[in-house]
Every structure is written in C-alpha cells, then in structure tokens.
Image (cartoon, rainbow, N blue to C red):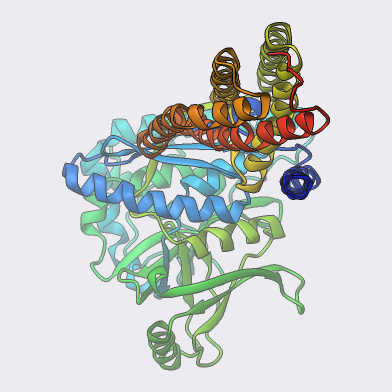
Length: 555
C-alpha cells in the first residue's frame, strides 16, 4: 500500500511541478502566468471587407479573395509577432482581425491593410509621352470644362495659401515662387493657356494647362510635380478620358515619397512601360538590412529560379537603362542597371528608416493581397478596460472558491477538506495547461474556468455520496471508499465526456470569444477528471493509511 501511495505522490508532484514550470516560463516571456486575450489586456479589433468599388465581382470571387486574404494576413500577423491573434472569416467577404497587446496601432493597421503588389517595370524616356501632352490638355478641358478647371485651380490655391500660413506660424521656410520651365524643356507642341481658355480674365492669369504642371528633372523618364500641384495633377490623371488617350505602351506612376530640391518639395512622376515584366509572385524571400556603402536602408530580395532567369535575361538586355520597382502602384526605387542581375537584388529606400524597411520586407515575405481590403470597423480596447475585466473576474473566482470551500468543509468536514486540497491541485493543472498550450485566456475563458471548478466539485460530491451510501449499508471504511469511487466512475465519465464533446463543437464552429470559453472548459474538464479520480483518491488513501480498519471517517 505504501509503495502505491509513493507512486501516486510522485505522479501528482510531477504533474504539479510541470504545471508550475510552464506558468513560470510564460511569466518570463510575457510578464503574465497565462496569455491574456484582447478583452483582458487591450488591443485592436478590425473588420475588413473586400474593396470592390465597381461591384463587378461575383459572390464566389469575393469569397475566394477573402479566403486568400485570410492566409496572407495571418502570415503578416505572425511576422509582426502578435501572440494568439484571432483572424476569422465572417460571411462571404468579411474578415475579423483581433490583435491583443498591440501598442503601435497605426503600424499594425498599415501592415495588415497594405495590398503589397510588387512589380518591376522599365522606365521609358519622356519622348514616349511628350508628343501626346497637348492632346491630354485638350481632353481635360473637354472632360471638365474651363469652369471646373478654374474651380479646382482656385481650390488648390486656397489650400496652398493655408499651408503657407501654417508654415509661417510653425516656423517652416516659405516656399519660393515656382520657376517657369525653360523653353528648351517645354514640349514642342505645347498648348498655350489662351488657346485652351479663350475667355480668361485677370483672376485666371495663373491658370495653366496640365502639361505646364509637369516640370523637367535631371533624370530621363521622370517629371517633377510641385507638392502643392500634386492633388490637382492626380485628379487630372484619374479621369477615364485621360487614361484613354495615354499611349498604350506607357503608364504614369508616382514616386512613393516627396523629394526636396533646394527649399521646395516635389513629387516624382515616372513614365513606365505599361506591362510589368516581373511581379511579386516570383518573390521567395525579402530581408531588410543597411547598405554598407551609403548607410541607407535597403531590402534584399530573392526570386524563384524562373523569376531569376527572367530577371537576368531582361537586365542583360537593358544595361544602362532604369528599372522601376513598384509597390502598390508607387515607385519605391528606380536604379540604373549596371550589369546583368540574377535571382538576388535589392530595393533602395532612400531616406526611409530601418523600421520602414523591416515592414516592407515583412509584407513582401507574406505575399500580396488578392484585392484591396477596406476597414469597415475599427475598435480599440484599452488596457484599463482589460484591467477592470481581470479584477472583476478574479473577484468572481475568489468568491466562488470561498463559497465552494465553505460548503464542502461545512457539509463533508474532513473529507470535504480533502476535496478542497485536490481543488488546489486542479487549479494549478488548469492554469498550467493553458500555459503549456499557449492558449489565450479571455473573459469568456474565465467563465469557463469557473464553470469547470463547479464540475470538479460536482464529481467529488458524487463520490462522497456514493461512499456515504456504502457506509450506511454497513461496509468497512476502506471497502466503502473503494466501492464509492468505483460506482461513481460511470456517472463522472458520462458527465465529463458529454461536456467535453460540447466544448469541442463550440471550439470548431464558434467565434473567438466562444472558442476561448471552449478551450478553458476543455482543459478544466480533463483536469477535473484527473483530480477527482486520482488526486482525491490519493489523498483519501493517505488519510486512511493512519487509521485502523475499525475506525470511522467523517463524511
């Protein structure tokens, strides 16, 4: 008997020590014995939807897009380092993303929502588009009318004046008046303002054609647009009529960051070959680093074997030309090809810092979204709300435990004390199980924990009542205990098994909070079964080892 008790004691001690070990490890890594969910430690809640502004996608296409987006966003969130995120499809075209413990919400939002469509396009000379600028000027006037253009020009002028007032107030240097283009830089067939707007008055003296907003630069294939003119030029370029008259082989794309020249800032407008010769689908890896020569942030990329062959062939035929690297339609870098490039290359990020380089590498590794996603709902859960939930959950648990201890000891006396001791072991097992599985404890999970405590006590009540029946029938104490545990076994197995099946169904088909409840309840059921039939019985055997066969027990 003593040998059996020794083995039982070693098993119980080993399980408790393992549980405490997992709790300590979790505490070292996260500062908490168990990982806390969004509702307990704060974080972000986003509802995303496939952006289909023209409404041309079918239900099946939207569903397929959101399925692929779910996998890509999960990869991005994993790279971001968020513990136990909740990423779940809702309906046919929506996605719920919950990120607990996020501190930089803007960065997380940008990384999740960025389409990250990567393309490589050849930079074309300005001569490919300059002859068509007069036609674009006439098209804009025909599409909008002179009055609308005047209104847009005046609106932009007001915005620029407001910006300059802010610059004066906050001590920024006032931009100098824009210098006109040199005559040699103007298109040969430039359309004069008087030709486009024959009824100009004195107030419209500064109204200029679209082509005159495009300034020359020291790089062929690149126009410069003053920052204050950027919104107007962008509105012109978005007109379907303008897109229709652009040369079929070229397209216009903005540089991703403004550049400073002297005391002014400009946006670069690149003339690119319309068809990309390589896309991010052939990208295998991307890592951020710093260029040893110029000490600037760069992203080194690795292409697949097929992509490397295509890249090598094209760069070999275009030595001396420039290749633009585009991310979501904006030119991130446009280096000159100095020699044939194989499967490895790099993206130069100019003045960007290492944090931007790391984020870019992250989204490139995770892949491009199949379609843009629109944020339909954004909710931030503050840590104060989570702390309130923790404190209330702890209070509810302590009150419940106190009442259970009071009733068990008051009704069953010494045997009730044995059950309470087993309950302490049960609590350590449940928390250790959560830590071992890296499960997240949510507010519904606390409810599941309290419910499983009730089930653990219920199993002990079944056993004690069976033992009492055996004692009333005149059985000896040891026989009554053995028979009580044996007769209660089937009822305990039935109750725990049916509840466990229910918890598994809730986990499979439930949403985030319901799954948190199901996980905690499942761990609690398993721990309850172990403590009721093994730990409590072991404590009974230890208690009976100091009694004679003729002694009675308090139950």
